[in-house]
Amino acid sequence: MKFALILLFVGLALAEPTVYFKEEFDDSWEDRWVQSLHKSDLGKFKLSAGKFYGDAEKDKGIQTSQDARFYGLSAKFDKFSNEGKTLVIQFTVKHEQDIDCGGGYVKLFPSDLDQSDMHGESPYNIMFGPDICGPGTKKVHVIFAYKGKNLLVKKDIRCKDDVYSHLYTLIVRPDNTYEVKIDNEKVESGELEADWDFLAPKKIPDPDAKKPDDWDEREQIDDPEDSKPEDWDKPEHIPDPEAKKPDDWDDEMDGEWEPPMIDNPDYKGEWKPKKIDNPDYKGKWIHPEIDNPEYEADSNLYSFSDFGVIGFDLWQVKSGTIFDNILITDDVAYAEEVGNETWGKTKDPEKKMKEGQDEEERLKREEEEKKQKEEEDASKDDEDDDEEAAEADDDEEEEPEPIGKDEL
Ligand SMILES: *[C@@H]1O[C@H](CO)[C@@H](O)[C@H](O)[C@H]1NC(C)=O
Image 1 (cartoon, rainbow, N blue to C red):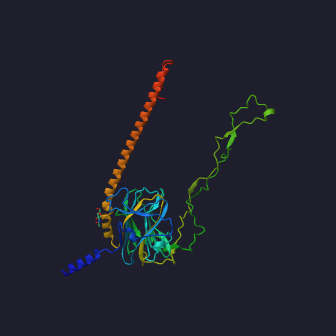
Image 2: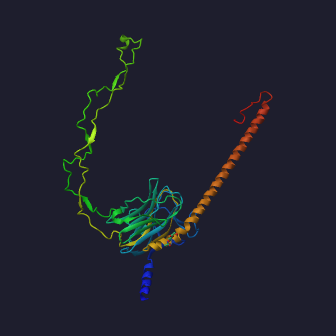
Image 3: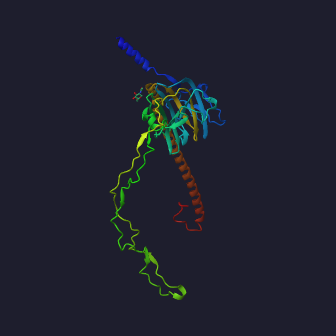
């Protein structure tokens, strides 16, 4: 009984997520977010659920509203360290403008960030989220700052490039593993050490090892037995044997007649000896490796001592991206649940509304095209009537034209 109670308490304690930051954007959002003043022409975010949505209120997020602008906006939260804990960063992105080029990522900064001066070079801990530019760049960034460098993930993680809301989740665990989820499904995972260049390589080629001079790496060699046949060499071009001196050729006037040259059918090109397997072939020489003296293990790659600000530092060509449902927590299941409750509930009605709008557009376009065609036909009929009238006047003098009237 006692044991069961303890288990219950432990269970409860484990089930309690720590929420470092949560933002679902409402009318008071500007009380919590700070616009950077680093440049005077930074783009403005506005509160909007966009042109189509699942829920007009709940799906309100902040939307980039000016084309070809940099954006700089951030919000503070109580400083924390993820040491010994799982870190989950999650948010939704909706490129409803059908984005051509623009960022859709967040940055997590240390607490000492000067928010009103936040800019592209402001040091951050983690950058995470989609980035699209043309057909060539459609990726999810996962960047960790480590010893003064921003390290890019070495794997290619593809992002979504449609117009709908998508849920992006980064999980970083204290065992130095990570996971990236899109729409609550794992798209990538692995070890921090393997997928970023945090550390110098464990092994390096032995600087003292050298390929022996007599190491034969040629898989095949020329056959020493093979020799060029005696009758091989023939000229590439020969005088055309069919050509005849024209009858009216005047040697004195035209010079000595020479037949034109043609390709020699017997020409065989450059002779090359046959290839045979090299009896001395030793295989490719493999540079032996040694432990890298520069390698220093680090079991705290995942850990940052100070998170305190989340921000959007973006460039967008065509604006219209909506960010929403931001969550920073230590609890993977909780984040998944929040994802289900927000994006999970939005996605289907949002799609339905968009498809409804598209269908409406299509019908409207068809209607307009029909109307335009009718107007064109009507004005053509008028012209035809005029011509008929004109021709009727002419009829007295002239034969009426039997065909071609309609073509005029
Ligand atoms: C989230 O939704 C998916 C799909 O409906 C479900 O399988 C999963 O268990 C849900 N997760 C949580 C934590 O509620």
